[in-house]
Amino acid sequence: MKLAKKIIGTAVTVAILIFVGIMIWDYINFTGEKEMKFCLEEGRTEARGFDYVEYCNGFGYKAFIYYTNGNVSRKAFGPFWIQIQEDTE
Image (tube, rainbow, N blue to C red; front, side, top):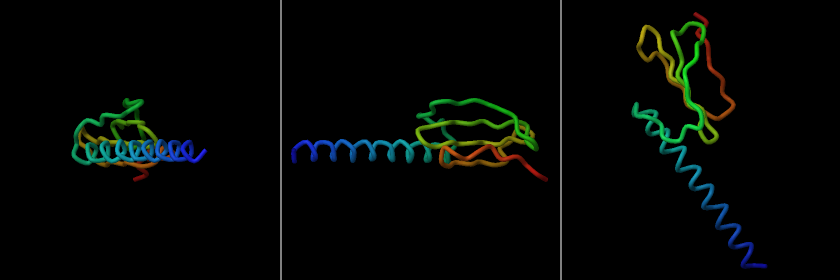
């Protein structure tokens, strides 16, 4: 029984470390303006006040890049529950 608990504990720890590693890797790519590697879903949509918004839904996180006049005007990286923000100005 002790061996099973140790194996399960090790497996859970390894899974958490892999998850954190994936998030850190994609965050580094996001801030360095490189392509994010672990997007489960990516695309482009519209938001009020911006020309368009590119998004990436990853493993427990979302990333948004807001474009105005063809240039990046804002970037956002956060947990899976964040939503696209609209410009209220």
